[in-house]
Structure formats: structure tokens, C-alpha cells
Length: 115
Length: 112
Image 1 (cartoon, chains in turn orange, purple):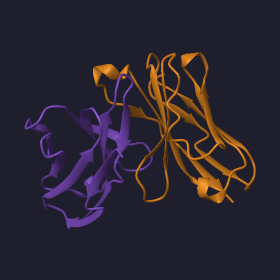
Image 2: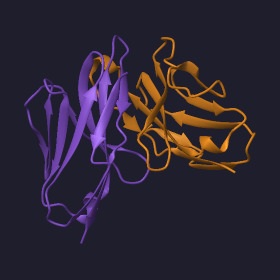
Image 3: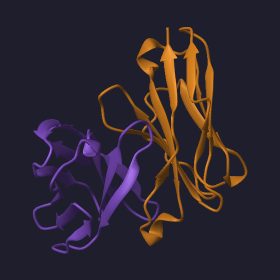
Image 4: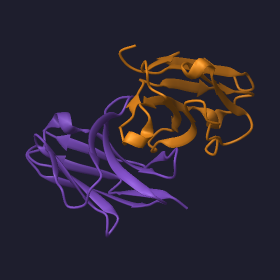
């Protein structure tokens, strides 16, 4: 696609429910990132996929968070048993192979509110 | 611990003022430093700096990197209300796969 596409753009869920956030990266981009941004804070790294390599999950805050990337393209971030502190904007980004030092391009984000 | 620190965290200026935003970094195997502008949700790319001492310029914005002192600055001259945003600094770092770590951002408010 023309840009990184994320859905839903807004999601309100009850505490304890599971949510899935979707990211469709720019066509041809091999690297895909998930970041979380709480109100007034910077971007917190969650997980990174690069081609067929094992993902870097070092930023996932707990085992309630998981992500997968199917066919090297679309990615889904799943948050199980949501808590109020999970409320944030979840940003997805993609880039060409990072060894060339390219920048990354962000989607518009999914605003998650846990009530 | 790898980190990127930005200062100030927030700044209020009047139109026409010049501002300087600071970014320092401590990362392993530094590759390059990036600046983004975030107005609503999606950060938009401004600059990528890889070499020390070479200024990058785009209109009223400019940025430079000092790899010896491990910092970068973003300058905005003749500020306008449209410059109001959060400015994010990020460092590419790491081995074969690499990663990108962000600072908390500087919130700039430009008053008419």
C-alpha cells in the first residue's frame, strides 16, 4: 500500500478482555516495528520483525502481550486480559532492510482505551 | 542500558523566536540519529544524521550530530504556530538486525 495502515484507529475495551491490533506495512518493507506511546510520553519499543529472522521481543512489557507477522507482511499485536495501564496509542512502523540505514515510516496508530 | 534523552521536555515560545532542541544518546553500536515531528498520531520523518559535523537543513529546520559528545541538536528559526508539535529523537543502534530507540520527546508550543 501507499503507507502503513493500522486498524482499528480507536478501540475501547473492558478490563480483562483481549484485543487485537492490526498493522499492514508498506509493500516491500521487510522490517516491522510496534511501539507504544502513553499520554505525554515518548515511544516505547515493543517488538521488531525483520524478514524471516526471529523477532526481537525484548520490549514486550509482559506475557499478556504477543505479536505475530504472517507471510512477512501483515502483523497482529495481541493484548490478553487488558489492564487500564495498557491504554495508549499503539504505533506500527515499517522500513526497508535496516542495514541500508533507512528511516522508518509510521502508521496513524491504534488508540486503545481500557475501561 | 541503551537510552536517548531529550531536553527540554517542553518549551513555549512566541512566533518568530528561534529554538534549539537537544538530544543525547548512549547506545551500543550507534548507526545514525533520526528526528521526527509528531503533531497528532503518526510521527513524520525530518532528518537522519550519520556523520558528525555535517548540518542537514530543510527550510527553517536544521540539525547536526556530534558523535564525539554523543548528541544532536534540532534548530528551528523564525518559528510559526504550525511548528507546534512533539519533536522526537531516535537512535539506530545494534548489530546485524539493529533497532531504533526513542527519547521522550520535546513538546514545542509556539504562541502567536
